[in-house]
Length: 98
Image (cartoon, rainbow, N blue to C red; front, side, top):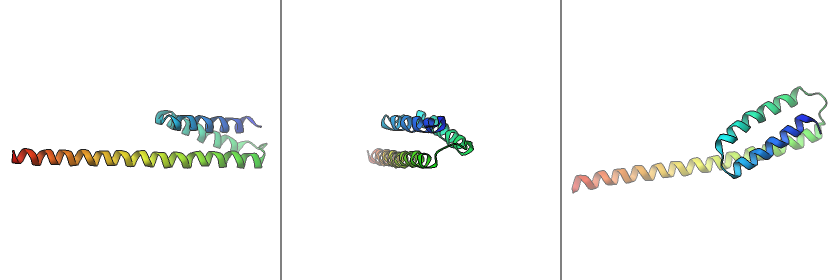
């Protein structure tokens, strides 16, 4: 396997690990690294296309999972902020009548 394909595989595994621990800072850094790997593979002429396709499909699966988890996390934060706003408004109303 070429060095570039190995880097893609290592980056994919690292992304999965960071996702499992919800380490968003590491995910951000690995995303940049992943983009560089993909750029490098586009330049390399000696890559086995079938292996490349397989590695990129696996990587795409990780990104789909990342998007799903990030969307869920975002919705959780939106719900929490909504509850905080409602509690603040209820406290204001309570103070008006007390």
